[in-house]
Length: 363
Image (cartoon, rainbow, N blue to C red; front, side, top):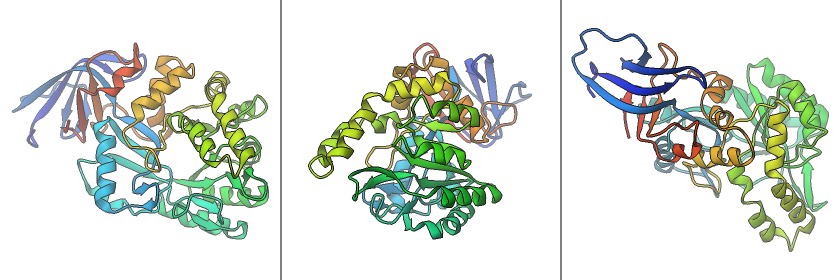
């Protein structure tokens, strides 16, 4: 399409779960519902139209061994784009991926800076590894480097106990979260275990990644405080394999991981039923491949979320939570077209018919 071309989307445009329109136009890279006058060149695409999908937990610039080079980061971003994920919340990366912002053909990224972990309590080469006395300073640093988010490692295996343990004293994490909020950033944390959660929520945290340790005691606390979760169920599916690999050295941890895995769907459904905000994220970029957002939405359905709620977790609701527009008048035209109604079967998301990024059909 040339710069003066108009893109016409016809069929069913899912502006919101109940706001369904017959058509929209893309003029100058932006959405409009007003028919353009005297357009020189019009390209028409038909189908079911959704806002560009959101992967609310992935890692561009990271693989299983740590930071990657720019060509690898580019490939990761392109894989997400081709899967329809046009807005990525990068939940921790040691690589500088700001150059992606200058590429019109790559997804938009909301960064959380680099992970902040306790010394020797996380995956090697991923995080700033520090002690509690330095937590506030590092949170301030990453708040300034990120795009409105900071990522903590809330718990990890403790070799002295052989099981998952919280990484930060309550006072240190409360001071760090307060500093992030003062700087205008929200805070999220990697958490698998049960005992980690209440102190973080009471300290004012905004989101918990994975949240496998939610219980009937802590779910009401999350709902009351409006703390979101990003369950990353495609990642939690790997827990049995992880447990088998570490069982000889850490049997308590292995047993714990299996139990968290076994109840994963019940945990997510209970949180959703209680009113906890749930969003779709894959944890791609560590040991998992990119481009799995459709699988994560299907996992949310398996957990018992209604189809519209599972869709909202990667579209309307997720974009609103992250402060980015969907298919509203004047919004950047980042959208995906499908053959059938994804509200009837979310598995449709696995096969985008067209991907439109910044107003251009790119796939």
